[in-house]
Length: 243
Image 1 (cartoon, helix red, strand yellow):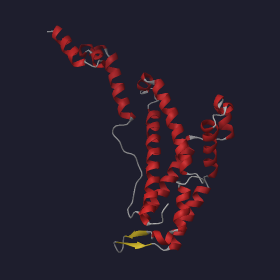
Image 2 (cartoon, helix red, strand yellow):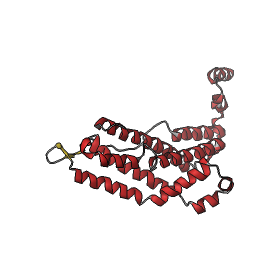
Image 3 (cartoon, rainbow, N blue to C red):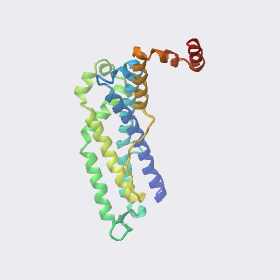
Image 4 (cartoon, rainbow, N blue to C red):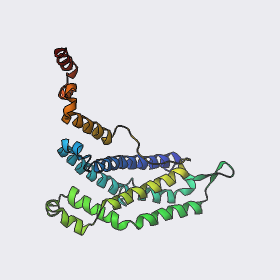
């Protein structure tokens, strides 16, 4: 990678985009999980096989992408990024906004080094979680080890890992990348995913239609016709019969 400010900023943006992708999948998984309640499960049951496949695929994709993000061997990872900006801090010229003077001020190398070292220490404190995450990736996905594939309990006994620890890694990546965005891209960034066209929207509409479909009081609406591709034509025919 080049050593210019632009190269470093593009590197940071690439890592941010990677994290946004991870958070997008994670958000959809959490939304699906919220529908596993007695009042909501009806919508999931309609496409139960599909949602099992989605959950299976998304969890494994998150696992792979997080391993890449925290790898000490990948050419593009948070660890590699921290080592790089530590080496080239003088060229990068990090800065922060001073609310008192209302201007951006260059950050001293000593101050920025403390920030970087703090992040490196933070990642090192998560080494057990990262190691177990890589264990899941290697044994279950990369090598498809039959012993672990046939009995996932063995995998979790050797490489204990739960959803809260995965969330912790995502939050750690978020904090680190947001911090460096302030220093290198001169603005505060909140790495969050906001969307009105996610799985929640699909499930709300699915449950609503299912309720209408099963409600005897709504038979005059002919809900079964709305499942058809040419529902408008069929609905007109049905309504004309009732005149």
